[in-house]
Length: 110
Length: 158
Image (cartoon, chains in turn purple, cyan):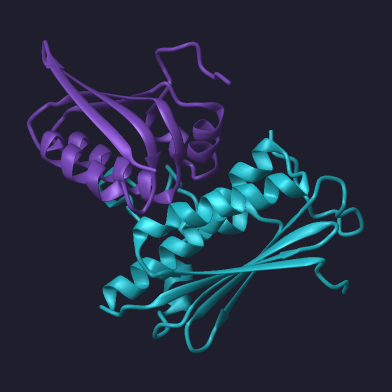
């Protein structure tokens, strides 16, 4: 029940890879890592959620905050590798309509 | 109303690090009862949201509270009660802020970053009741597939 956060920067692209569970305990760590990055000008951030086995509203809250911060500086945030469960979470909360989710991969995966 | 055939109760300190423990317990119990993978994942989120609310609430008011979680196992359903005994937060106020995001109404700058927890509980469980007196108690029920026929309220997720 923890989270592993990896950030790689190359060619103006911030690649964030997450593994583990995002809940009330781990969300603050995620926020602390992503927020400072999101406040730079025109950040291009891609967050890979392939190895995230669990997420709830605490994680959604972090991504909403980061998304707002990045957009306010004319940057871009993409979330990739979402499982069918995570896609459902973004869909039922209406966030799938607003945020860029799984746009560059095949879409759903089991 | 039939009697539960088993009842399991747990108490955790009102701290975020224990929410995952309750989530694992809920998963184990629901799995034993025969809930499907998706139903178990829904239950995990709902119970985590309820515990998160309780823990954050206790944290904000600087209390060293406890959260009680009760699982009532019935033949046809699982009832979960999550109770925090802290001073009550304003449920009415909280309810105003719940609900899905609406792209039409909310511009990105004003998108709220919280308030989805209660909405998820209500969406993912079959029946939810909030009681609000000394603290806040959430009573939520999920029926085993095909058991809740008469009310017809069950929605099948895509």
